[in-house]
Length: 476
Image (cartoon, rainbow, N blue to C red; front, side, top):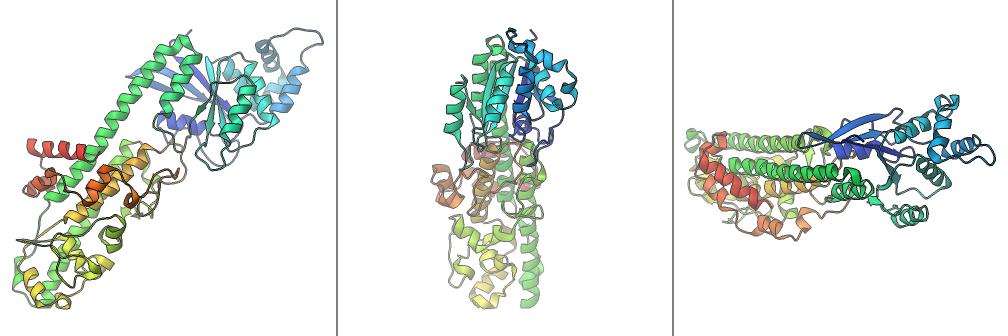
């Protein structure tokens, strides 16, 4: 027996066999996935590695389209009174010309079954249990290989999980795994390989090595993801944009234009830095750039939407803008007047960003206008940092719970939920980490970053590394 476990992935057409392999391999490019039946027409394999050592080979097979007719045909190949076991019955069929014509797809499946150590029988749990499924299982059982049913699409409201488990038990298949390839449970992969190991004791060591390696990879991936977000937040907190010195003595209209231009540049920089983080996270989790719904992340044309600077975003995310309030601020938001600088959040409150229109200082009174004209720097407000952190945490949760076979883009944020509908919107979440980011004190790493404008330029040192590491832990 080979050291590498060979597993055939079999089942009826359009049950998610290719989807399962995509998710297990974390490869969105494996095979072809669509909602149409019979997409896979040939056997295609992939190899799973455990610490650079081959652990298992999985083989995608075509869907079984006419099991009822094939079972009748195979029964007809056995003479009355003749005693022939399952593998011999299958071999007789494969030697016939019909295996290359009428039953070509089923023949490919059965050949791969005989060449494998075990098989995963993928079931669309939304389908009712029909005679064709029982005939498929009888044909597969004739190959005398351990068979593990995998219930797919169990997160769907129409899933018939209990009905399928009961039907499989009546056929003697009591080891059954639920594994939704669109929204797999966090421990779903471990359960699948653990259960498979109970059916194939000779390969338990290889499967355990694969389980352990996958767990280490997942931990490393989560840590790397949090560091990506933490580094972005540190750089945003450290950023200080100078306003043209001439703004202080320029006429009102000219001063307004100068400040508006400075705010627009900082706004664009925040968007670009956040988008760069999103792109890096998608690459880290081995998803494609378009695996996120552009108008729901919310992203627009590959970028976070303007609602990052919108009053409604602040309200829905449970974040209050600014610590020092001044009467008359736009959209009911506070104006944060910092000594020596105007924050991006304060500019948003004054209308520079909220609604996308610049409103003149005169609208809020000469007292506020005079203070604003005296400032020479723009920084990113704490409230904006909170929103960015909350959105990135929600994106991380979506990526953790997404299968690589999912066809619909990720839906995250602003009242949305994950594809499986199992997560709460950020504003409704009650976990301690979310509450802390919404209303608690910001991590000290961000406070320290305010004093290091060089960190915003990507320049690093040990202090910055320490701040990023501290913030990564705070992201939870």
